[in-house]
Length: 196
Image (cartoon, rainbow, N blue to C red):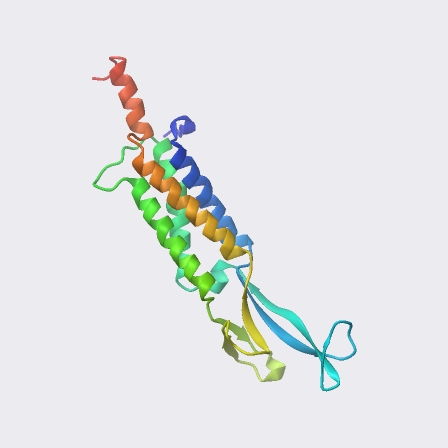
């Protein structure tokens, strides 16, 4: 079982790199935050309300795995499928069945793109814990909540949207490619008269 990456198609390369990027973006970048207001007195730049002031503070930050309950699993499946596409080809495995692996990756990339775009338009409600000294428990915060808390978008979903688009594009190119790396290798052997 030797991996040969020399015959990868452009689509397989794009999809594989975008799959790795999506996984890193899901894990390492903040996708959403919870902003709140804290009361402050006499601080520079405060909004004065009734003799005091309010400071906007970042209460909590969430990556994709922390912000979602189901969408993160779809995104993870998409990233894994995108990474598997060039590995499958590098192993010299033929594409069997009615669906080409590139078509499956393109479809998953498209679904991931739509889900991320939906959550950019309508951020998820996030749960925030109440400190035990304030009574404990938790409550849900949405984008439309009035102060003191609101959900905000960070850089993660924007980068994830780009990665999902590249996964879909790479899968599309791979599915359109007339032959996989395996077929190229066997075709070359037949042309040379070396096949049985």
